[in-house]
Length: 482
Image (cartoon, rainbow, N blue to C red; front, side, top):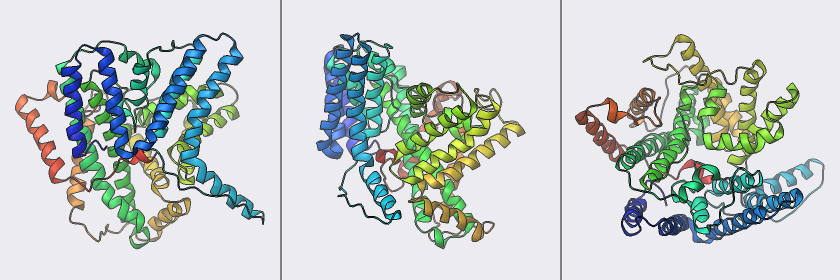
């Protein structure tokens, strides 16, 4: 079920009415409703994959309870490995089986031998990379004695399957989200209206910015050999804003929807395209995944401790694994390695945590140094996104080569350019609103305090008008494939 679909427009008010009307004040029944609604929400794509979520939920619930009754370190570790094997086993099979099979076959071919194994027509379950990491955070934290295991299966099932963030995050930690299912929720009007405001901005990001940019990004990337260099640059820019509008838009809708039900989810994007270096970019982009890899992979590997070569190894591991998490394609691995290369100078110079504040804090405009830092960081990011978007590594290199071989300084040309200028104007408007709202949790979070009522409601209705007038061809959220 897509957030920007008619189905969800009926689903959300119905669940909201039952939650705050019929089941108000009863935590267990509210949690049961969340579980039921979440399973319906997920089954809307393919009901057959519900067994994966249910099986993973039961395994991790049992593993954590067993850990509470075991003091022997080796037995506790064995139980943890049961959880890891089940969750990563599912993820590895559904997401990476054919990738490894094809690469094994190609490797044997290089040595003059053949290796034949049956490839499978595997359907990737929506959101498996997200809920797998979410439930793993629970068993790992129980193993580390950071939290006590829950004895309430309903609450745990609601945590694993919570429909606002089930299929594309944020990837919540059990230590943060699970306790919220134990507490009584009371309807908070201010929290709900703030959630609606965030949902509205998320829909604008997705339907107006991402979907319209996707139309042209797809055409340009698919026919890159027919366009001049400047058009290819614009295609990369369109994808840059497509993936940001698409993914951060999903996160905004998810966080806003959770607030309607009295839950707080972690902030997943913090205006990453205003970053002054790559280190800052990765503190602001897909925060829930970046911090997950930091806490459950990078730090256990040794983090920034040890020799310089040891630290370099850890940086490459974390970025390459992050890239591979996104998909079974060498393009994602190259994208991850490229970001590791970007990050290395900051680590070696000890400046990777230099920019921890908001850019141009308390000022309307950035300094020249800040402008330069943002421009360089944004350019590097756009270049890396070419590999992320390309169908193959060869496709990416051909795309980059064509930028310089086919008139990079010529006027961009489109076969159908009736909407290009309006989209570019909308992008300028979008960047301006994001810049003005960069101090908030989301771009229009503080309109209530800053704008008079008439201007605020005019803005809201203006956004709603744009949603209908400039609505692009409906497309699934990019991260559903991950």
